[in-house]
Length: 409
Image (tube, rainbow, N blue to C red; front, side):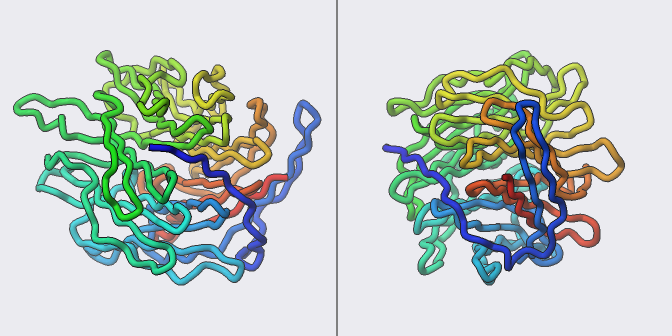
C-alpha cells in the first residue's frame, strides 16, 4: 500500500464568520522575532446540548466541524463545513440510542479529497465497556453515507475505541484504535492492544495489523503523515507499569518496532486517560504529551527533523498547574502550536503555546475559559496555513460546542 503526504493549503478569508476578536497581541522573543496573535470566536453550527467535537481540514484547507448532540437517549453525530458565508447546514452522519458516549473516547471525522469517513461507538453487550467501533464512509459530492460497519473482526464483546484516522492515497483511510479483544481471555485479564487497518473509500478493509500487544487501556491515539510514511503515537504500558509515550512508523511495507518518544519513566498503576498528540509536515514531526512522574504534572513537547527516526530532548510546555489534554498543530511557516489546559485558577483555561521550529517558545495565549471536569472533554486543534482552529465544549450554561480561529503572524 502506498501512502501519500497531504499538505494543507491556505483557506480563504472567513471574516464573515467571526463574531468577535477576543485577544490580539504582539511579542518579541529572545531571538528578536516578533510574533502577533489574534483570537476570533466563530459562530458555532452546533446547538445547545452538543459536545465531543472534532475540527479537521481537507487537502484544500477547508475546515469541517463534527459533534454529538443528545436528546434523551438518542445520540446524533453531525458535521458542518466552514465556507466564506458561514457554516453549512449541519448534516447527519448517524444516530442511535445504544451508543457508548464518553467524554474521552469520542467520534472522529476524516475528509480525504472527495471522500469522508467517520466513526462512533456502539454498545455490544451489557458490560460497561463492551462496545464496538462502527464506521461509515461517504462521497463528499452526494453526501450519502454507507451502511455502518464494525471495523474490527474479532467478534469479542470488549472495549474498542480511542480511534485516530489518517487520510491516505486514493481515498483510503488509515484507522488506528485500542482493541480489547485479548482482555476477555478466559478467567485471566489480558492486555489491551493497539491495532490499525487501511479501509477503502467504500469501507472495505484492505490491510490490518497489531501494532503493539500491550498498550495503556484508555488514552487517545494520534497519527500523522510524514514524507517517509505514517506515524502513530500512543501511551505504552510496560510489565512494570511504566506508561510513557511510544511511536511506531510504517517503513518499507511494514510497521517498525515501537520506540519511546522520550523515557519519562512515569510509573502509574492506572490509566491517566490523557493521550499524546502528533503532527507532521514533510520530515518535521511534533509530539506533545502529558506526564506526572513524581506527582508533578507536565506537558512536554519533542521534535523530530527526520520523520520520527529520532527526537530532541523534550521541552517543557506547562507545569505543574495543568491536567494535560493536549493537541498539536504545525503551521506552514514551521511554527508549532501546542494546546493544553491551565488549572492555575478555579476556572480552567484553554491555552495555546507557539514555538519556533527549533522549539523556542514564542508566545502563549488564552483561547477561552473552560472547566477541568471531565464534562468539558478535550479541546481539539487543527491548522490551516498560519491559522489554528480550536473546538471545545462550553459548560457555562448548557453544554455547547464552540469554535475559535487563532491567527499567528
